[in-house]
Image (cartoon, rainbow, N blue to C red; front, top):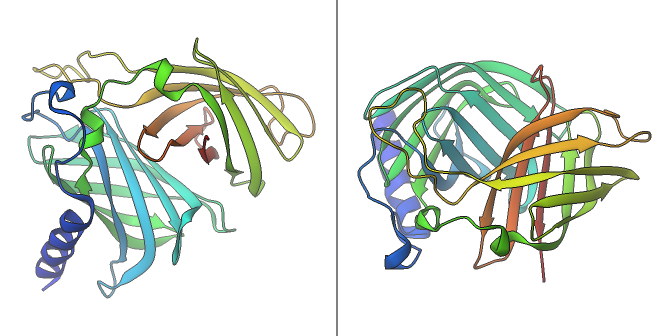
Amino acid sequence: MQKMKVASVLALTCAVVACGGGGSANEEKPETVPHPEGRYDGFVFDASNGQSTGRSGQALVVGARSFWLFYSAPGNPALIAGVVHADITAHSIAAFTSVNGRDFNFEGFGTTFGTRSASFKPRASIDVYGSSLISGAAGYFVGAYNGTFAQTPTLAAIAGTYIGTAATVATGRQSGSGTIGADGSFSGSSGGCLSSGTFTPRPAADDNSSTSPRYGGNAYDVVLSFGGAPCAYPGQTWTGVAMYDADTKSILVAAVNPGRTDAAAFAGTKP
């Protein structure tokens, strides 16, 4: 019954976000890959009853290396509520697992730990189960591949000033802004805290000794450094990823500290 529910949800998700669609033909990379790399848009469900939590999500699988999930507040897809991060510890052509998943919740639930397991169809769909997926509760994310991932990431595309919401587990959500320069440099501000950093388009390369190259995809590596007080983490440098949507001119950014006890996230749009 649970598998039937997931299949039905995935079919609906594909209809909503158009599995495999998006991006112009001359920008697409090969469709068959040996790992789940890609962007997947979908929804979060309660594992205890299979019912929707009301949360939407955007997942990024970075080669065979890591899994990221940006999820929204219940019933409000525009409001970021947390980030899930997990290192991929094993993978095959149709599945991957992680033993060190972290959920960084910005609604007051803190940082929780748990395993992650996923099944996927390359460049089509993904179903991720977490023993503590969000807010300490078991759940699963069902997503359909977003074809904009096939577009080539460029600094020219993401350059500009974004207005939106910034958050960490320690501070919760705050209004924030950030500017990305044509050279990939970044400067931001939220709650009086100033930050700086760099955005770098992800180059095509092998990940985790994969026998086939990954194709880079529409994603960016991020280095984020916090200024002094009143920043909650003065002087610290964190690393993470970013996804950009050219149609909506919106960006999602997440970075974790070295101990993976907290994460910083930003969801914003530019004019």
